[in-house]
Image (tube, rainbow, N blue to C red; front, side, top):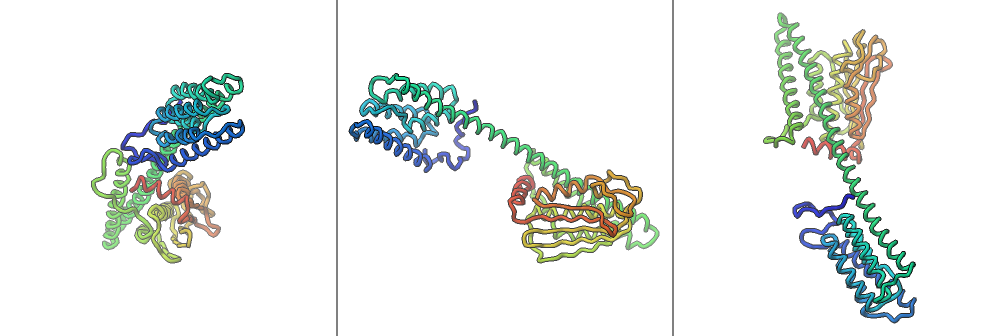
Length: 419
């Protein structure tokens, strides 16, 4: 049976655990006071019911028995011994009808909670014997009293054991959730790597092809293509290095802080790259622009980046449009193109996924890009829809909420790994 072990001296204390300066907390004091009130009330009522005069010593001992409960977390065995001694003195000096004091139940429960079951069971047997002295020096061995003492002891010890088991399962569940969070973060990093490679390599390929095609022509066009090619390669290396730093963060500490993650301020840059790569792209912003949470900014950037990359690869001769809209409680981004697609394109590439045929294209757009975008939107509590347009072309639209519990959880999860 799992039991709670004492925390090391330098371990952080839970809110209901005793701190380093005080051996007991306010909750301990409230529990001790409540137990004292219950026992004083019980002693008073049983005395009146049995026509016994109230004993001042009995009232004092009922209160004194509750005082050790203040430190029951640190010294459960000693506290149980002190409580049993006080209650035994009460039973011998001012006997009343058979009863099982509240202070005894709380002290026994503490032993069950903070010590192994092999210690709690013998402690419970001792408590049962002491409870049988409530009528005086002679043990009350009547069937009713004996059954009452054993039943109360079994109830307290059993409840403590069940609670310990529940706490152990809860700790295991928390560990599994932590492992799952790490696994999901690794998948998110894999999506980041896919976005980086798919976008930058595609851009570099198109720029290299454009430069080669114009080697004997306009040198200015060649120069711009080579500059874009160099810039894309540099950005790809920098972003991949950041991801690798995250992956090996457990092995070595970063000497220098990572560069800021891209966001909405970088949309103009990738739109310009798209134009230079041969896809005329229009970019508009609606609503009042404002700073967004870092992970939301990154999600918007990656969705636009992946959508434009897919459009350049699969839309054929086309024009694209990027629309960013700031709303009071959300931000939406829409990327659409009017391309007819590449005839004969089979599903399974890295373009638009979902295996939806674009009208008039004669082919399909499929792969991991759209799956990653959907997962990215879902991570922030948002949604993403994508599909062919009736008039031709393809559209990707995502809506990401702001200030919701889901997005806050996403911020905390991503922030722990990205810094």
